[in-house]
Length: 218
Picture (cartoon, one colour):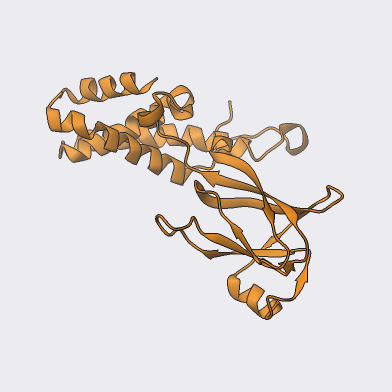
């Protein structure tokens, strides 16, 4: 299902092509996408990025589309990976009270958040890097919206969740009947259970862990 089809489906399901409703369809869709992306952590929401840190500088800038960390590793001159431990800023400050204490980073913390138009936020590393290292970050992000790209992973692989998520937002905007809103909500929840199955399967290996039963099995 592409964006044009989704737009038409919303108008058909709710039997309205009123101008203000149609103008707000992009908002309904983006609200639905945000709800889905904040609920599940499917592999398609994960990215990988590398960046260099400088000796004597304890900060590492976050990517512009960063949401949350999956893992952070330091790669030494031999190409060996060492995964850092996630800690609070106060732990790093107490463990390394002087920024001049340098070594191969062992810990990281989210130091600050986004500052619109200024920066995307930073991690703080402990100890402060003693050399220029490559850092590899696996992180969760929001993919581009189907509104902007015309197609998306959700539209192609989870169209029921996307459709009913958008219907919930759109019908709420229309102040529709409570029973019908509950029906749309129930259909959305059923579709999300299927996405949860994908989320669970992405964290397992059936060969080693055994075949799943319950959610997402079949």
